[in-house]
Amino acid sequence: MFPSTSDFAFSPSSLFSAYASLTGFVMLFKSMLHDFVPHRLRLHFYGLFDRFFTPKSKNLTVIIDENFGLNRNQVFDAAEMYLRNKIGPETERLRVGKTPKQKHFTISIEKGEEILDSFENSEVKWGYFQSENEKGDQVKRYYELTFEKKLRDKIMGSYLSHVVAESEEIKRNLRVVKLYSRDVYPSDDDDGCAGGNWGCISLEHPSTFDTLAMDPGAKKKIIDDLERFLKRREFYKRVGKAWKRGYLLYGPPGTGKSSLIAAMANYLKFDVFDLELSSIYSNGDLKRVLLSTTNRSILVIEDIDCNAEVRDREAENQESKKTDTKVTLSGILNFIDGLWSSFGDERIIVFTTNHKDRLDPALLRPGRMDMHILMSYCTGLGFRTLVSNYLGLDGLNHPLCEEIERLIDSTEVTPAELAEELMQDDDTDVVLRGVVSFVEKRKLERSKPKEEISKDVVIKADNDDEKQSGSKKKKKAGKRNGKGKSKTY
Ligand SMILES: Nc1ncnc2c1ncn2[C@@H]1O[C@H](COP(=O)(O)OP(=O)(O)OP(=O)(O)O)[C@@H](O)[C@H]1O
Ligand SMILES: [Mg+2]
Image 1 (tube, rainbow, N blue to C red):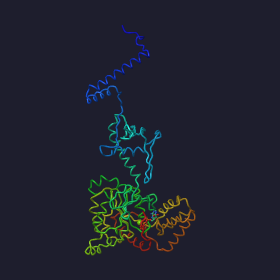
Image 2 (image 1 turned 60 degrees about the vertical axis):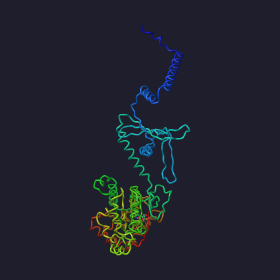
Image 3 (image 1 turned 60 degrees about the horizontal axis):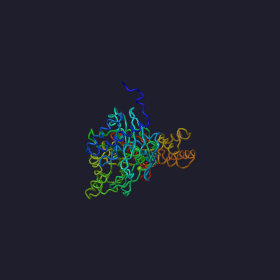
């Protein structure tokens, strides 16, 4: 006969005594285990115990420690950077910090906080933890990444790669671009400077492609070229070429050559190495200096025509017979063709000149500089960009702008000259009337009509006809424009 239900009625006292005896049994069992079973076997036993008595979870949790062996764990650093942009409204405690040299605040989640993220329709949960020793000192920092077990391949493969790639992109965008110069004395507290014999400062040039006054088509060509260059790691590897690109910027003073270099650096987040050839004493020195530049950088040699040895190889031959202590054109060319083509990644080299026609043809030969870019007098469209930069005005909305654009299109004025005019007064009408009289005066001075080619265009190195007429134009422009040299990063 089965016992009746009343036989199973538990009184509180019987429940309590049952609990007490079970606890007693567990304690006795544990202490027996401790006393009689060897350590290793004990751990195995605990593991089995956990396996049987812990409910099965459909989730998997991955621990991402701050350190990986003796090194830092790249996945931890990537997660820290990536999660900054994922902090949602549900987060209750954050950490914020900033060093004196940092431009932006660094925000991260406090321990115990969680962040939810989704990737290709799959949900994951991140948690940040710190373990502490008995004294309360922090001994380990780690993230826990939790997701459904069935997503294991996807999360451990493509999601983590996505986290690392995104974090690289965020890092690039936050990065302060550096200007390296041999004139800056290298110092120990240079934050993020590569060292070597270059000193560096932050490049805080505000020039961007948006603020650059030039023909929109030419601007787009340059941006597209840079984009293509960035994406072609595999291409360069496949064809066995060094991942580098050379640009020659030429045009009269004040037309934006240095501004374009700053815009390129800000766009790519590449550091700029500004090489003053006059500070180099020999080709050996040149090699040493150039070898200490870093990847993802733009090497700039401004006013290359101003260096007598560079522009005249005849003279160079004579000179080299006399002395071996000069940097020569062949030194530079050897570097571009030899050393330059065999080391480093993601490198850009830029030469600037006011007088392209004075350069040795060897420097202009196709294959040396990938793109020749003429920066010339301002166009009506370029003026629109300046008006928007300096007056915060859509050029089309002001009655005087149309007239100015027409005037500019038939006159030789540089963006630098117009920029100066646009800063003359706070009153927009006064400023624009000033621009009209400035441009009209210039037009009278230079009554000779200019050739079509003088507008901003991008000329490929292998287009000889265009190169020729551009050079002639520059020669004339150089003679007419007496503006002195100045570094304007
Ligand atoms: N195309 C442009 N777009 C916007 N601003 C310009 C442009 N060109 C010149 N400027 C203005 O004029 C200043 C001088 O220009 P920049 O130094 O870039 O000319 P440059 O061509 O390098 O001259 P140089 O041949 O003398 O080195 C810039 O700081 C900027 O304010
Ligand atoms: Mg310049």
